[in-house]
Length: 282
Image (cartoon, one colour):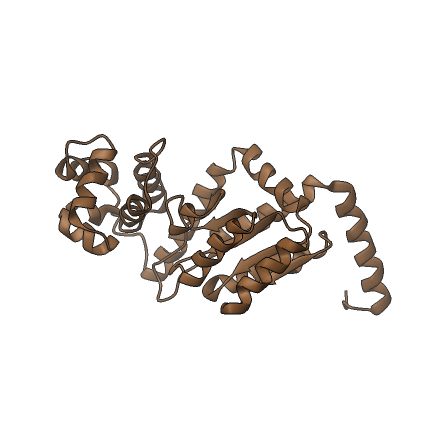
């Protein structure tokens, strides 16, 4: 599949929702349209409803909310927006196509980062939160751990929340009581229910929720104050998280840039400690 074409068509579909205040049900429909790409332009309203897990009238109301006379008009528009998404015959085998899709996800992320103020603002929020809880359950747990490993070198109190259950709510409450103002959450498909419940709990506790997720219309968008999207590859048996991992490191850079003096001091102290303990061989 041609990653440049796919990236462009995805952006065009996302453009349908810009400036439109969507209900939670409508976000589910929007997410379905983005996830199923060019195929959705040939599905009936009933089929879209089934894929999104909503009622058929909800799909019709969604089309009207976007300014169309009904779902048939929206479907025609989707066909126009996704036309030409089939890649050339020499695009390579399925493994190459999966990698090229990831290149497209990274290219889309690079375009989003043209707005440096948004990512810089997120970095300032994270830097100011003491402690800084970082949430990631199931497939998102490794990303939360990876981010937290490096963030702990420049932030005095990073707390990884990678286990669900009743203790998760306790740990959120404890972080808020200790002075946390922000929760950084990694929310990736298939969107664990516990993760979305935790976002609600965090906001109820007064925390600002910053979510790294796969789409601006993912289920996390309903519960987050700031959504930072990065596409997830779905061409292999298990998802590829190249773009979310990259965005995590970009966000960490923004955290460092928000407090450069503290960052430098902490990194220098770590290097002195690591050398004394001979942590690394080179």
